Picture 1 (cartoon, rainbow, N blue to C red):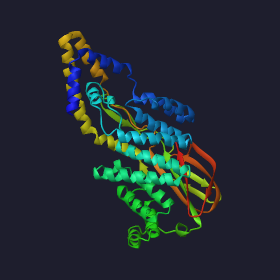
Picture 2: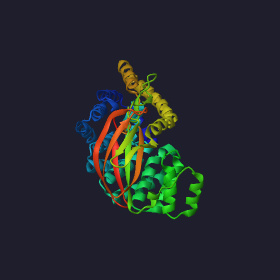
Picture 3: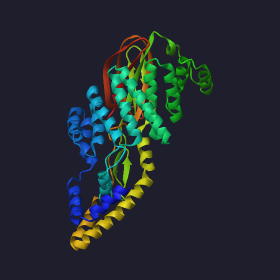
Picture 4: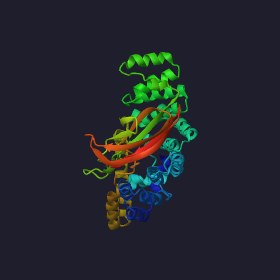
Length: 420
């Protein structure tokens, strides 16, 4: 904090620097949302290659916004089926997010005199854990289970660190913990899987398939006391023979449904951000598995809810920063007036106009994460996926006739994103 005060004092002693600083900011005043909106439109139109090209240009720039553009760029690559390239970007983002545990004094001073956007984008807590979840999902699509296990361990490391910091449940990202349980189970590490499923349940007992997972994983891990306890707790769950059939495998469809909410200026005061939900016609997914039957996706995680709660939790801290910013702007304008009254008036107006809400976020995240899990005999199958409205009507989100191979004792993962 002392360094920030020194930096502000230095700027206040340079009236021309203050004015120049203001006009420099306004000359590049396009918001983050404005810069990425075209890419999101390309994705919705099915032109993912154009979105990738747009986001690559933004992500290649070395500035305080690099992390947020890397996150959107990596997501677009995943949507385009470029899983290896997506992971190269997410690995870069993961490393960068670890380096941004501090803010430079210059940028904090600039944020007080101008806008919150002057501070390096560090990412929200649930977003940082999502980085490893996206890495893991890509590795699972590439059948690189060992690499997915590395990300599962990274998720656990972050989870333990954040829990020690007493982060809120929604910040701990229950989906990532649930995904790590899936990965442990895929590697037949039954004990690790049972522990991870239990931790996911503590974070969010509303994960739809979690009750079956708790019973099955406890029994496979030979945690018989826990198995009996879960059986007693969930008497409605009926065990299925295929859960324990070594000649069977499992198909796991990970569905990223819709779009998360987007930050916008509060119409009452543009210095404050609000989150606006994005309409998605697809609310759930129907799967037809040739020769087997029909299935519907189940809820795992509400990304929209986590984003909204994060913004609500930050309200008090943001208020403090905004008050400090108002004071800093008034002091700066006074210093300029001492040298030139007209220039001081201009500086005051420019600083007030530039004082706007920070709209940066990982905006390509989905609204929810959903899942379909089907135990199958080993063999080759064909599946089709169809997006559905909340009323069960078909949407424009379709994946047709994808061939899959199920191996005995193994999981086959499919990752699918709906955007309509």
